[in-house]
Image (cartoon, rainbow, N blue to C red; front, top):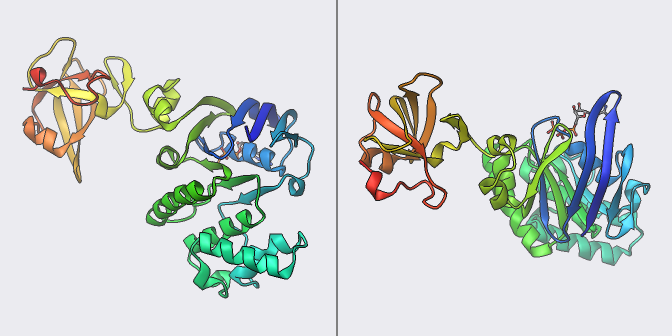
Length: 326
Ligand SMILES: Nc1ncnc2c1ncn2[C@@H]1O[C@H](COP(=O)(O)OP(=O)(O)OP(=O)(O)O)[C@@H](O)[C@H]1O
């Protein structure tokens, strides 16, 4: 394990930001700290980096007790949401900064900078100034600078948080590919479940200063440990008193055993997807259902149509068995 966190707690006055956190971060993997705002993700990352102290507990990095080591002695690379570049220095000099203060030869520094800029696809921008880069390019420069010192761990705090959705998505794919190339143990903070599910090897769900669940994206999605994890990983709705995912609901237009009868009261199409609101015959909150447009048309669904809903069995996934299709 690259990072071992044991019994870490942190208070700010009376407020408990982290309580008894125990976590192992595997070497060479990409681990996401995922959770709602204020849950304690950044505080935990800052404690790993040495930018914040824990009130109790220990942090081990690469087998060394780092609990009392200052940040500069931990050999970690750090990238924040709003990266503070040196505005008066070129991109190349920004990347070189951490190497120069480590007293490497000029030639070594130049070679390493070139290698890093190649890695983040910014070779042609070496002589520009940060203000002449786009937001996404600036974050890539920040990553190059963090990686230049060959850190044992790379810590990223919402590194793409300030960028627009399209650039975020591009950088997310790019980060995954970069990680597959360099395999540096990486911990990144995000409140975006899609980002975590898409990029991470391991996800740690943090809420109100505690770990709710640790697992692979598949484990979390398929076996959420709590209603909180289930609802944090995507939309949910209540069917027959249980929380379920709207796309795990089977819709039929003829009665089936154990199904909840209702009427389609709203139909919204978003691209290939159709979202239905079904008001139960027995009353209560509308139930949300997601299905593909093809499925919805095939079943003749539309506003005002009577339907029966039940949770699709995990074996069948969201596909209803042919026998119950109307
Ligand atoms: N220096 C501080 N002094 C007082 N309270 C703090 C301090 N730093 C963090 N907190 C509080 O601790 C809690 C956890 O903050 P933290 O930044 O770790 O959350 P987060 O999960 O990273 O949230 P976000 O996604 O909004 O950044 C918050 O309620 C925050 O207000």
